Length: 213
Ligand SMILES: [Zn+2]
Image (cartoon, rainbow, N blue to C red; front, side):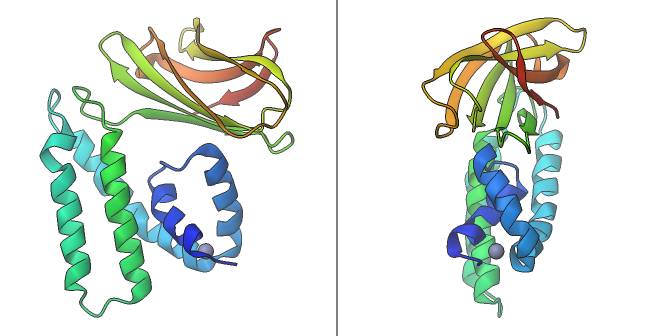
């Protein structure tokens, strides 16, 4: 059944800012809901426009400062103008405005583009993870959201460079398997562009998940 929370997730999903566990659940809903699938397709254009905007912003200029609030104001005005739009269409526009605002927060000052993203879903264990890496002068600032870790104990997130070099980005410990989503952040000396993939490993070094772009 399609509920208001589902329709709110449409915008976040289309722009790739929904957390791993939520995105996984939402994809299951999408398969059965033409209405939300249509919304995602419609917002694909917004995501592309945002990406173009980020690419066109000259290096050294933070796109948020220039355009974040303006974009939201314009989107809000468009909603107010209304022009015989259906209620559903307004909801989608509001979602787009909110997502444009939150998406803009992910922009990396000085990098001229947003963070890069790696994801993985293990259909057997149910484990999901999303990693974002934003360029910094010293390397990459890394955010991780992981759900459904199939065992307890210490795990680590490892960045693997294009040349095969490895760096541990973060470690954590779960008291029980399949706990609620874990969010943490860390850093790597590798620039995002130099990172090939991320891996979640057990303390013994066994790979639980391999995240790709
Ligand atoms: Zn739906």
